[in-house]
Length: 141
Image 1 (spheres, rainbow, N blue to C red):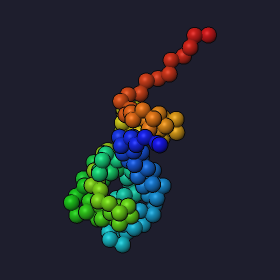
Image 2: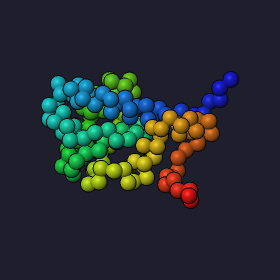
Image 3: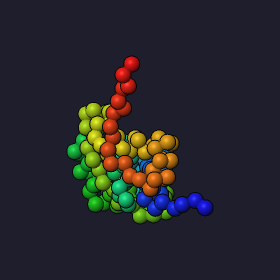
């Protein structure tokens, strides 16, 4: 029988939620509009970035957008739409996008690595977590 790996399942669940939110981001913003056109406009400068447990992290373009989206009234609107769409309560947190579009931070690199089918299989098989990313070494010719 298949072995159950709770840690890997949790990592896959986080990734799955992030992928679903990324895939439906435009629809999500449309669902926010009837509750607050202002919040929808603010979300145009944001995108799903990560899932940390029960917290969805949005990447925003400026401090202004971060402060406005994290305002309790605005955050409550976003969290309510998330709950309706995904059937579970999630908190929302924003982080400001760095100028580089390449994922240079470890968390971003790990998130990208977890999207690879072979990496996900290894995580499941070994009940593992990614703790670092190392460049491939070139073999001497």
